[in-house]
Amino acid sequence: MLSHFGRPDGKPNPKFSLKSIAQEVERYLKQPVAFADDCVGSVAEMPSCAHTWSVIVLENTRFHPEEEANDPAFAKQLAKLATCL
Image (cartoon, rainbow, N blue to C red):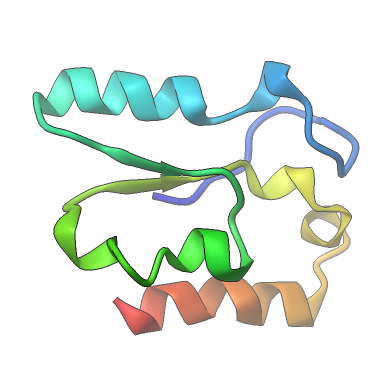
């Protein structure tokens, strides 16, 4: 799962973390849900465990200034995640 939430001005802010969303999704689905501390890069790709989880919640895309700037390179990083699973 990938989303943006709030207006954290392009930097991490615990108030806008999607970790609590991951916990709620886990409670709703009644199954483990993984959480990645970022939405891009090796942390988001979780290469060693992605296949073992049916749901992975990635951190807020708005923690990156490139998200609101509609940066094409950032969009490619996000799209890469959808095509590798």
